[in-house]
Amino acid sequence: MTTNQLLIPKSKLWMAAIKPPMYSVAIMPIWVGSAVAFADTNNFNGVIFAVFMTAAIFILAWENISNDVFDSETGIDKNKHHSLVNLTGSKQLMFWLGNLFLVLGLLGILAIAFLQTDPMVIGLILLCCFLGYMYQGPPFRLGYQGLGEFLCFFAFGPVGMSAVYYSQTQTWSITNLAASVIVGIVTSLILFCSHFHQVEDDIAAGKRSPIVRLGTAKGAKVLVWFTAIIYPFILLFVVLEFFPVWTLLSFFSLIFAFKLCRHVLANHHLPDQVSNCKFIAVAVQFWSCLLFGLGFILG
Image (cartoon, rainbow, N blue to C red; front, side, top):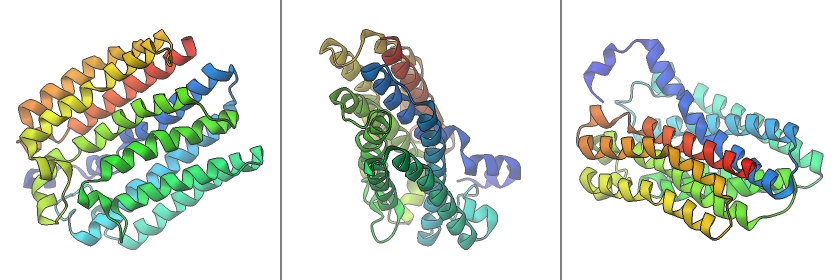
């Protein structure tokens, strides 16, 4: 974080702290899981979809806020001027606000479980919340050990999408599990990209993120493979007839995937230049998942 960022208007710092584009992380698994459920059953419950979407946004808000709170305890965010704790000056306020969002989100999921008289969905979402807590929350702080991407993969992939699919069908699906692998990988990509610009702060705080462990140059090469693997997986599942051929629409997101890889390969060692790569990764996730889900509906 450079001193130039002290000159950024407060309004822009607040937008950076709230991170509106990042809520694609919560929205897309619900979109894809519901699309797979519709493809499998030809039924769609709009009320459950809307409640689940709202609840997921609240829960992700809790996770983002609590991460800032937990990071403030380790000192890793001392140079992060768009940290919510640094902007408000109150860790306690952010802690309780985050918990309020968590309660609101869980109430929405409880409402779905109540409507279905089936506790499975709330159980799966509680597991997702626990995975999210283990990322930064004490005593686990597994993100500091470089395990955040694994937690992210399961929370937004197999576990989270199983909850979404079950909320629509109250059954399980191998197709949904296969789709959740794609969504889990492309969502974890965003977290992986968020480490490139903060290597010095991570090292100072003892955080062994994947980029700290690999170095930015090797991390950029891993990113290329990490991004590229998404598309052969989709093609493979189409060939195996798990996915309809229309899911190949997701290949149009290769425009953003190429942009992301080129940008990181060229700027991995320049924190100020590479700091926006996570937002390019959000574009990869948004467009690939949007078109992927659309493919299930059309198919």
